[in-house]
Length: 129
Image 1 (cartoon, helix red, strand yellow):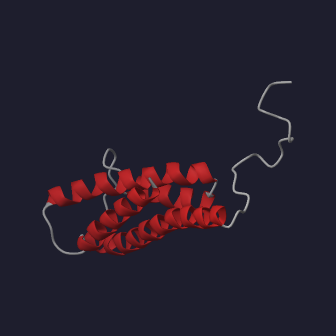
Image 2 (cartoon, helix red, strand yellow):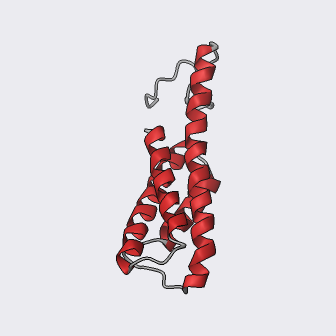
């Protein structure tokens, strides 16, 4: 799933970088849907990991590129936003993939890799006591 998120971020970033050229209005509408969707997808991925910096960065991008309530800015203002959003999306895609590879490598070395709550007791199986 994380490698498909990386593919989504690469596509969204490429569309953002390509948006610096002159296109029809429909291209920018499509861009808003794709970038907002990939950003929300990233928010859900990083919420599961508890990474607040990625959550906030991707939420801001999702709000800026929201197609339902669009943000209207001048073309000169959108250019740096497109570049920064593309770079953030690419970085988040590789950050999501990086942890997957690290965990797979740790498991092959025999390290303990679990997402258990560190405050739970060894005999606690989630039952109410």
